[in-house]
Length: 319
Image (tube, rainbow, N blue to C red; front, side, top):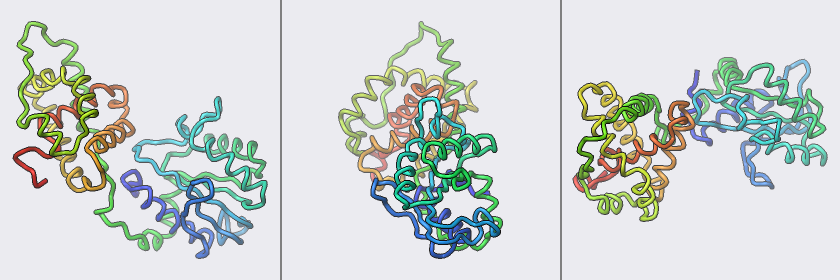
């Protein structure tokens, strides 16, 4: 099984195009910006074997690839489609598909995503698309991770035809180690003693210098300091306590992974504000534990930065 969530959007689109050319034909045109700013792949003619060789689709087929970095993402997530208030990525596409169908520019619609797709969810979503666009339900289809895996097994040359440069992998990190630390810290904060010395420790590099070296903007740095600086003592104390050795090890594992990924991809981001927000969004998206502890997740990321565990500092300006 390919780890689709570790790919960039462009890399995922390459996989979809490679598979699509084998399902529909080599004439399938790759992803390009449409009139509405969206990115669609397109095939005109009779498909080679989709949905089957016996009864293939004919006419113009629009294929969309919806990639996510979420590990356990599902088509049933409200962010994909919430039929109660007609929101989500599928509902956002429905008006565009309706226009293409009514104008005769498209006769078929296939949406492919690296999300889990159950039979019940597929029926609900395809019916909604059909009902709201007028496109016959037999001309609407969804494909999830299991179908992607099956296609790559059926067309092994599709996978081998894709060149994915490891250096082009986006800044993707695992949330597991940080989630373990956050859970332990949350419990520890609840029982923290109130009569301890809570003087905040001094970072190895002054914050002013740290922000300059990493190109963190003054407004962003001030906002982080205002909201999370008070937790620096608690986090340091928690990680320094011998009883929390396993959490400290998980923390260090997360730091090491974050640092190597940041070093490799730092040039892709203009400011460290962008790096911080990207990491936060990615971690929250990939872990339910972190999603339910957003404030502590932000605080822990800030501690990593403040404590010079991630980002440049005065002793390592070549990073």
